[in-house]
Length: 105
Length: 105
DNA sequence: CTGTAGGGCTAGGGTTTT
DNA sequence: TAAAACCCTAGCCCTACA
Picture 1: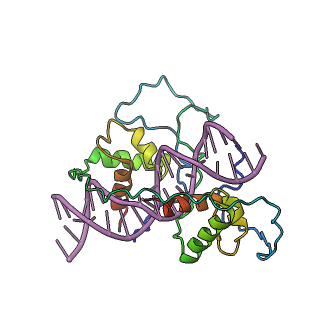
Picture 2: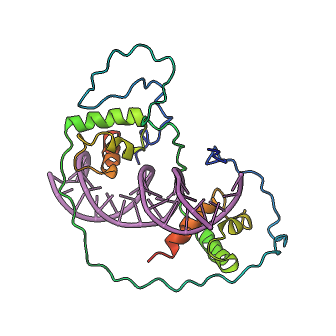
Picture 3: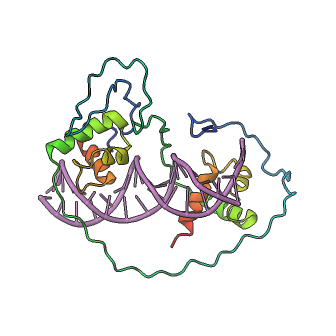
């Protein structure tokens, strides 16, 4: 896996190149493929209903803490799927939100 | 604003073993694994840190539009390297993703 | 090896409920 | 009013494939 500079500490190389330089005109450029405007798509009245708020239990909180220790903050999906018997009815986003609350202030 | 510990300095140096959640498997005596056995499905340490999301400014959007006009949708690398003074810190993939957002709906 | 297309996931702001 | 729980989605990542 050669991660050709995936996202390092800002490796903004010089990449100095005169912008106005017509050095790459040797390409058979076609006009842009004018894709037809995307279909209108209705306002969508299907307002997905909100899940009923359910308070977090202590086990969930502890499992979340350990999950963050193990996988790191941000890997919510991993933490979620490795604890399917604890996080029932929770989404990765829920874990993220809960962690935000737990670490707030 | 909650800075607390959003994506912290990957504090899992001290992780020694996976906590088996509610159902601790009875392991048969675990000596001292000097060698980190590459067991399957373990904490993914190969996860690179995410770049912090940065909103696109109007100039970038306009430049992207003109780029697509000129080079066609799909030639992200060309559009990127011909506008190095505009797309700072952006990747070809970023341009692709942005165009997807701009033409969505 | 290189670059893209398309699906997956998260961060951060917003909304609703308690 | 504040805090907790949930929602929305732009922006970023992963990866098969051309």
